[in-house]
Structure formats: structure tokens, C-alpha cells
Image (cartoon, rainbow over all chains, first blue to last red):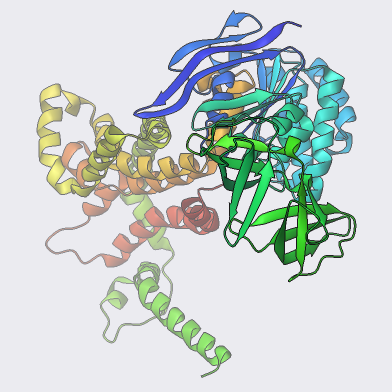
Length: 356
Length: 275
């Protein structure tokens, strides 16, 4: 598999603000990569640098093996889908689609034919004569995608393309974008702040914070083995529970501090006695048992049922959230036991947040 | 007081205010149709006894108005063309770059607008005279008007450019266009309304310009209509009906343009002219 996009030691400064810090990233041809992180983490800056809309300060940026550092956007042969879609308001859908072809000097008839072909695959055939203002949000989204597809670019860049759609349409478009990617065997870089989008769509997820890559890998690898507390808390929904704890004298037990509740868990390895640890447990990895039957007992504060699952919040500090599949018999005020298996614990250093 | 009564009261006040505001205009039109003695009648008549339509033809012929209006048009179109060509680029740069120097530039541009023409004319006259520009008086006036009105145009057009989302330009860049290409194919068409409205306002200003024309243009055959109107005035002026007929023929076309395009002008100024 050849490398389509390669970044080596990329830095970006805006005046005194250091937006990207020593970014190393290789994207293989045909993969779908999601850049995910909270706002201000540098993911959009990274994407705009790939497009050539931002100039990187130092480092190397290669697309299809060619050095692209100072190359203007028009010579990079990448297509971008913007958050606001950025459809040209004074052009019809057809003119929007053929804009890039017309600039390249493609004959009018040929451009029209290409637009018709792309429109047929994205379900826009009956809308070619309309103006963007006459389209719904989902249709605009499709036009923006089609405008990218028509060019057969070296890479597709998506800048939070679904964030302006309502929830139902977003779920639908998620699948459509992924299907499109598979059909075109394209290289795609997808920026989002929504970890669910990243997890469901991408082959490779890059989690960013404050201009650095915290972790990258396959979605489930990030879910199963987050390298630090930030990634652990960012990936997964509902978010992982974090509980402060201290290693017991034998080095094999953890004393959890849940405010009024104290829990003891055993771990399958030896840790330094007295060390402060943050224990991470995903809500879906905690089982509910009769009081006294689990690892320890907690009082129940809130039970929220969606029919398929129930979210149980324990009255502890910090709150412990448990997801139970199916109908729950637990009521607020009950004392229940929680079952936690030691191989599903994530241990992080209390001070640095790094995985232990 | 309920809503309807209040609305009616407001409407009445608005009509009265508009009537006061527009009375001079009405008086101008009515005076053109009065005979010489009727103009000075006491009490004044609000409607001419026998409308003197021939006044218009007489003034047009005797005052050579065609030539004056032609000169006004030359000066107005020249100023608009010069300002548009120079001002659009300037406004675009000021809209797209934000730093301390741009703020300084904007401040200086607005400062230019503060100085009145009657103050500026002396140095301009002396400067143009030394450069030999007074040989081409209409061109000299066009340049002087352009310098005077450019800030107004730049500030208005800058606001229009700022309302064009930058993402559209970026999309055009990624789609394969150059900066200049993106400007002409995306930004300019979207800012067109705002630019046209600003140009129209400049045109109307330049069409009625007086101070520079009066000072710089000596030859009567090159003077615009505003100076021609002034030439009526003397110590014993009494031909008010002729003066008003001249003024009527001068301003009615501009008024007509304004009334016809009034809605677009207002929306162009307020909303940035696009959505």
C-alpha cells in the first residue's frame, strides 16, 4: 500500500500561537482517516494545511510523493468539502459541479456529461438547474460532495461536513459518505469533533489535542487501549468513568475513592504500593448485581431508560455511570452491587494521565 | 391608546414631516410653471394660474443646457469609472486582511472624508496648476472628485466584500482557481449589487459637484450643469422661474433614478446586497 499523504515534523505558528506541534502522520492510499478532537485542537488547521489554504511553518508535507510545502491549493489536486458547503450562490448546481472542470479548460459538453454522471450517482439529476438557495440542507451537502467527486482528486478533505445537518440526516449521510469512499477507493481525510463519526466511518482515527496527536490507530484499538486519560475520555459514548484510587500495600489492590463509597478492586499485576492511580471503567463494562453480590455496593441516583439500554447513575462522587442492556429493574434509591472485571480496567497515572 | 390609533398618528406625523421635507422640491416644480409676475405675487399662489410650459424650451435653448449636462455626465462617468477601478481593489484588500496597518489605513481613509471640498480646493488648485493639469480641466475635476469620494466608496464596498464568505473563495482555490481568478469569478459577482449601488451614489454626488468644477474649469463650454446654474445668479437676479426650470431639468433625471432604484439602493447599503 503506497503512502498518499505524508507529514513529517509539521509545525504551524500563528504569531505566538503554536497551532500544530511536530505532527507526524502517514496516510496510506485508499484509507479513510478521521481527525478528531475538541475545538481548537488543530484538526482543522491540519486539514487546511493539506489543502494549501494554510502554509505550514516548518516540516515536510507530501501528497502522492511530491513535496507540497509551498504549492498553492490549485496545484495540489485535492478536493475539499466545507462545513458550510461553500456552494457558489450565483451558480446553478450544474455550474457548481463543473466549475473546477471549466477552470481546467475541459470542453463544455464534456463537463456537462461529467456533471450528469456524478449527479446520477448522488441523486441530484433532477436538481441540476436549481440554485443552492433552493435546496435543502441534505441536498446542498450532496452537491458539495459531488463537486469534490467530479474531479477525481488525489485526496478528499472533509471539514466537519455533517455538523449543519439534523441528527437523523447525519446518521444517514455518515453511511453515504463511507459508501462513496469505498466505491471510489479514494483517500479521505475527515475532520470532526464527533467521536462517533470518527469511530463509525474511519479506518484510522487520529485523536488530537492542543496541536499534538495524542494517539492514532484503528478505531477499536483506540477504544480498547487508549494511551492516556484524554483519549480514554474522548473515545466512547457515554464517556468512561474515572475514579481516583490508591494502590494498596500489597500492590495488587486498588482502593477506589467514590466519596461516601469505598470500593476495593484487585488487579492482575503488581503496582507500586501507595501510588495514586486514576481508574477508568467504561459504563458498558460494569455489571449490575444484587447488593452485596458485586465488587462493591453503590446507591442509585437516576435511572434513564431508552428502551434498549438503561443509563444508571450512582450517587457517588465522582458519579459512576453504568449502561445496562435491556430493561432495568433498578429504581432510584436502591443499593446495588457493581461487578467490575479486572481485565476491563484502564489504569492511568494520576499526575500525568498516561496509561500505566 | 390602542395599536391602530397609534399607527395612524405615526403615519400622520410621517406624512407631515415628509411634506415639510419635500416642500422645496414642490416649490421648485411649481415656480417653473409660473409667469414672472406670479413668482413675486403676495400672497404666493400654490398652483400657477396659467402654466408656462414654454419656459423649459426657452431655458434649454438660451442656456445651452445640452452642453452643460453633457459636461456633467462626462465628469460623473469619469469619476465613477476611476473610483470603481481603483476603489474595488482597495476595498477588497482592506476587507480580506486584518492587521494594525489595515486599521491605520482605514482611519486615514476616513480622515480624508472629513476634509471639506472648499478647504481642499486651494491646495488642489495650486498643485494642479503647477503640474499643468489645468490644461485638461475636466480630467482635473474628475481626479479631484475621485480623491474626495473614494473613501466613501471604499468603506461601502469593503463592507460588501466582508459579507462574501471567505470559504467560497477558499473553495474556488481548492477547485483549481488562482486568487485573481477566484476574485473575478466568485467574489466580484457576489459583491456586484453593493458595488453598483455605491457607484450609483458616487455618480449622483459627482453629477451635482460644484466647488471643484467652479474653481478649476474656467471655459464655459467645459463647465458642468451645476456651474451653469450658478451663472444665473447675479446681484439683481429675478428670473426665478427660469432658474427653477433649469434646476428641474438638472435634478429630475437623478430623482427618477433614485426613486426607481430606491429599494435596491437601501437593501444594497444595509444587507451587503446578497444572501
